[in-house]
Image (tube, helix red, strand yellow):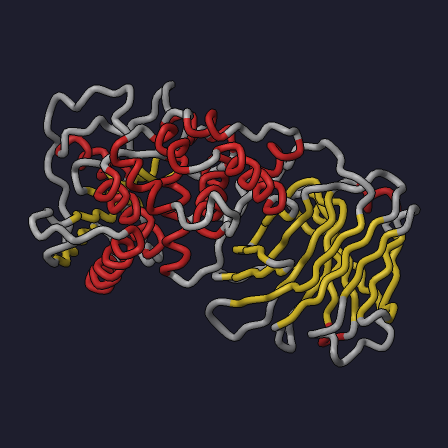
Length: 452
């Protein structure tokens, strides 16, 4: 799993005893509110304009006024982690060196009280999400004057997704799904009591970031009496009280915890593997920003020799797109993909084994419907592991997989056609027929990139 960015803590580390030499940043752009420095090829002038706009919008969202006397926020974009460590020393912070106390690989973040944001990046990386996320932490500090990971991290993701007009996440749910399966979701009180290091522990597989994002979505989106409209009051209480006390002063925490855990259960029914997926009102949407296909699997697995099915209605796909299902998903290295290729009127069945693709099997499709882009698509697996694919209630093809069909989770596959840039797909009215879940761990490896 990649390292996390976010608010940086001094917890458990003494200040640096000496001052490091000043790093060199040949690319610089400045304004009264923000300064951008880069020692790597980045469009600093464009990023400065973006950061100024993001800062204004983040402040508007939290009801903060710009303080003319506040020094400009300094954003450093660094090729090497060692440069960030040198900046930490110069600002009186402990170096983020590896050590036995560290529970995650550090890649930069916002430094409270210093006005500094330091981020590791490579030439050409799109840093807008990261910059907006860290500025959200800065504005939270302006408004509240203290930190609260349980709210601050999720609020930074939520506000950044809105600012960049992206779907709301979380986008990676493997750790959360495992906790739901094992009935190991923390209580709200326990969640608010996590230390800086516990919150970011890599062994949680991003679960606490997902739970924070979901909590913020409940606080801002839930229309239940006792929750709706109280977030400004929570911010006021956070100025005077420690986080858990502020939450209890603002909400009926039993009601809030119930809504939060329901949201976690629903959100983790489908687990993103590849692609940036968002869920809402029975619709699954995916955005692909790089070449490749998207994959989404269910949290539940079928029992051996018990029939199951998945029905969905893909929309927004252009000619040349490929769409289908996966079954037997054990990990990114082990599953079976059943992909419909409308352009050739065929079904391609291919096995992913040990991280490699086996030779595909092409299954002819009878009477491929012309309206496939908007018709209901269904995978039905019988008790013997024979797969039947239908479109618009017409059987397209059958293929026998046997026991392999039951060895892991079923899911959706899509490779949207697009000439260039971002590609999108939408799945409406998605339903599954699984008898019951297996209490199996979720093994998705690193998961899709978490932009933090």
